Length: 366
Image (tube, rainbow, N blue to C red; front, side, top):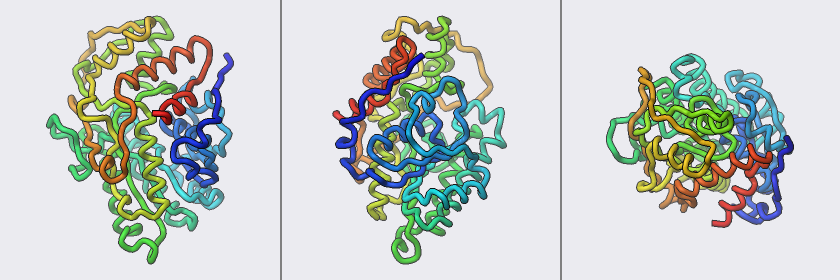
């Protein structure tokens, strides 16, 4: 099957103007779903993109389908010596840290690997950055699940308590505490420019969807695999509510935040939420039904089996601070996100087209 990316001509003059042109950027986890979208966006904005990650976890996968012209290195963030050596070679100006064990259900089966990667791996990234003279900014991507879920039906704000019942959520809460500790101990914004030259921020996004995700135990990849194989997909927990958003939404926030940090905006070296509007949340069942309405190959079964694994019934984050301080806001609502995602997969399976660039261009024009 031949894959086609489409034109890049309109991107360089688009989002962020030419700020990212020739910027030396390192992305950990660049072979993952969000990481590969970010790498693609930064490449076509003219950045000098370097990636450090484990090999793609699935076949097919978005990273290999894109066939990006970036510097890609296979490595494990749990190996501090190798990571420090790589940063010494790259000398990045900014590091976007996305490498993680990102699956809730897998965290139950592999808790040690989850905490090693999400906590000690993040610690290694911070240490490698602290020992690399070129680094000026770090954007640490965690999760909306870092919050201690109280069961309240409201959006969590950045100052809410960290926590988590499942190993994945707990590990992301720990990663946020680690971020706050390093910011206070080594990257204090009040001492920026005198005692150090690094600004560190963390980001918490909603449940992202978009083309190119084939991870296990995620609703959209499960639906897509079912459609491709011609079999119904079982929808577990159809009443659970999640802050669904297209992958480009939080990535636009990461890029905007990264720019502000590189510009020396010390007030931006804090935690940020990037989620959908408060009135634009859907249940798992509603999301699945929307896919079935738009793709005739999708068959659903709502006879979900019982599970002993704990998952939050309601989860939503409040992005008011990002709107007021950064000037960020969602561009696509859940309907737009679903339509773009369905079209990406339809085209991929029907004629091998990879519509990532077209989606970035369309998002940029809103």
